[in-house]
View 1 (cartoon, rainbow, N blue to C red):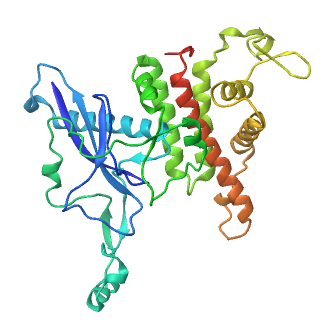
View 2 (cartoon, helix red, strand yellow):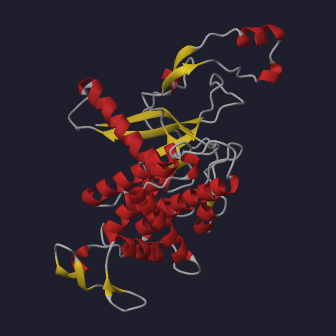
View 3 (cartoon, helix red, strand yellow):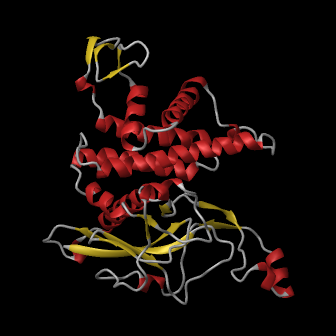
Length: 353
């Protein structure tokens, strides 16, 4: 039995178009006259539609409510995460623990408040708030039995895709969501992966998304998340089977596909695999190898020597240039992770499938 679902999800850039990938899922704007809007919001709601296949002998009344909710969460988590890595946009749901003290802001904007409304705003008591997007009639609008027909323009696909990921790939609350021209081919290959490989890719994709989510306040951990995800991609492409070790304990290499550029000796290790993977799937020309070296060396300093990005412990307005350089390093690493997965998925001769 196939059951269709629609729910509310969010993005950091407004969705003004409609995107459907085959029969797997669809995203589209919320176009309800009752839906609330605010000039101050940083999270932009949209509808996500998808389906779950249950046992063909079961009816809707046979499905346990907890099985139903779990299936929805799994499906939504996968779609929103893979879209977040194959594009420049973070798609997400509010987590159940997103609760905090808060006050209401006027949906019409402060400049349009009357004196009476201003007084009411200033006299508010804080309330314990739950992160949610609701309005009267939403429950009914979420009930669907098939995908919504094309009501909006199709999402724009940007080509060349490489420039999509490298030319100003920063979220823009005044812009609109676009996708690279590669996204459908990448999704095609993603859903064609073996169960074993898909499980590893899902974990790596989740790492990248976790990094994005904490990038504003846990900068060093976010950076490590991006690098760790790339390393997991590396593990899928390069195994130790092509390497001969003189000693399995200390891993002294006697034969390897790679050799030292200076002495010619066989070499093999995480760093060399990391660089070779990025040279193969992202870029090998220009100063790209120097960038890869900087990223991996920084990864080692953070993971092993206790070094942190300066923004994680320096909260003054000092060292602005250094903080901007650090931000750019994190952004470069995030985009390397995105390009790595995009190109790896599209590569016909990848080691794993």
